[in-house]
Amino acid sequence: MSLQTSLDQITATAVAEGTIVGGAVLVAQSGASLYSQSFGLADREAGQKAGLDTLYRLASVTKPMVSLTALALFDAGKLSLDDAVTDYLPYFTPRYKASTPTIRLRHLLTHTAGLGYGYGPETGVAAGLADDDLDYETNFTRLAAQELRFAPGTGWEYSVAIDVLGAVIAKVFGGTLEDAVAHFVTGPLGMADTAFHVTDRARLATNYANAAPAPERMGDHYLHRNADGSEVLFSPCRAFNPKAFQAGGAGMVGTPADLFKFFEHIRAGAPDILRPETFAMAASPQTGDVWRVPGCKFSYFSDIIVDPVAAKTPESVGTLGWGGIYGHSWFVDPARELTVLMMSNTAPAGVDGAYVDAIRDAVYAGL
Image 1: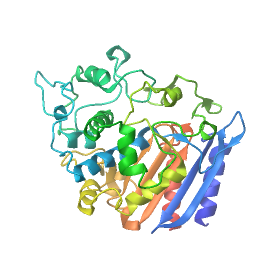
Image 2 (image 1 turned 90 degrees about the vertical axis):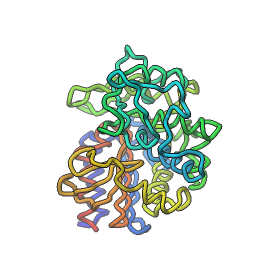
Image 3 (image 1 turned 60 degrees about the horizontal axis):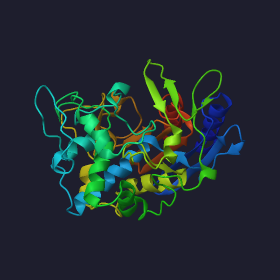
């Protein structure tokens, strides 16, 4: 079976079974397109078809763009990865076991700062996904009042670290975070629809959450309970709120066409963004002896496969990847010169699980 046929069948089945409402899958090898298709509906109730120019709330697909912006500032001599966060945000002084440890910028980039997600509503901490009217200092002063979950550099936990990094970037750049990302990443790559605001409401996808018997349309404030009992509060309305801080970990909106440019640029070594030696450093394991999960560590902007057998994946050693909780997943396999982007408007099935694994496995089987 050809790759085209396999991927067509997987996406058609996902729509028919109610796993995904609408989305897109793009695959390229050595810069040549192997597959580039949208499918399903961007807005089920309106009957609006999904396209490669459909705008999606990106959630954590924001993170690698913001991380590379920080690395571009490093290349420009504007910051050092060993700088303390307090050098730029003097109010950010979280404690750990009666001490105030130094959190360095490299800890933010690798999610080894001792921060996390899931701060309770009683803390007042916003994590960039739910709606808020907070500025950086107000929000991260509240975050600094929460004890670190481990000493910086000694563990790994997915976290609001890139939100904090966004505040550092804005301070160093001397404008908004959006200004900095546009200057170093989206502008040079011609990603005109990717920003911390919605460029065209008519093309913005509606968001859905997986439920029985069919995905539910998210309202402005939608509380989704995951299979493990954890909960996620989605606020699609946040994309329209100019008072909400620009969340470096979750706040951007963009299209499959734009994002594929970015990940193809990553596959090519990000030559328009970073110096070769900086990219080589950024795209290598940066967590020392700390593992994210078996077979995987973390680079300066994504997961990285260190042992494919332990990770139970067909991906090569050195494969970079992550996702976005609104329904996206991506990976770049440098050894195979492979770029794969899956975007959707359906959470969490579009992030990980059977659908994402089926796309990945079909790609490798079709090479």
